[in-house]
Length: 180
Ligand code: ZN
Image 1: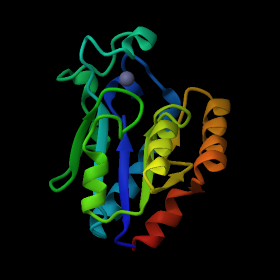
Image 2: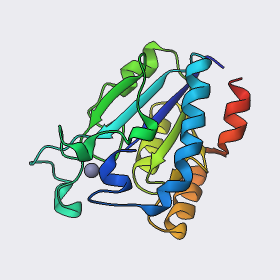
Image 3: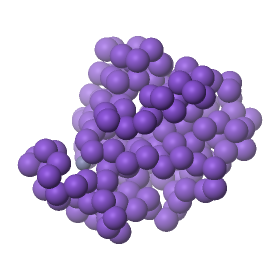
Image 4: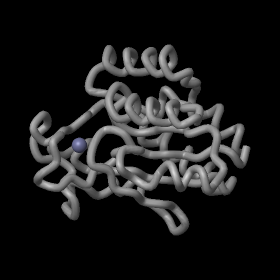
């Protein structure tokens, strides 16, 4: 059990209600909140990795400016606010591993299973799962803790992670019970 970490990706204002809104994200907020509480209680590392874009980031060519570093849009939504002891990392594109200290952090914590929650199942969760898999971690996805713009995109993302990265698809209740 001490080998799990909870990584919450992109639950920032711009991705929930701001520049790239996802109304479907509403259903995952209480689930992520319970995951956060359970992880903190069990001393499971809680790591938020959020877009903090610079105007020169290549990804803005696709999505336009969003979650710009230092803006309100890049702040974690108040309902999932970080607490003392959590780790907050900036990222520049989809994967939480790409040019961030996440890998060295997880290694020093001896993490094996990386629980990924947040937005979006088929984009950031998928790319973070890929990089976790490539580095020898097991991606664990609570299906009620991730969402996407459409149900199809959500389901495709889960299927891809399961098939190609040996991702374990679970539900938040199972993790909360495991961490109890
Ligand atoms: Zn972005």
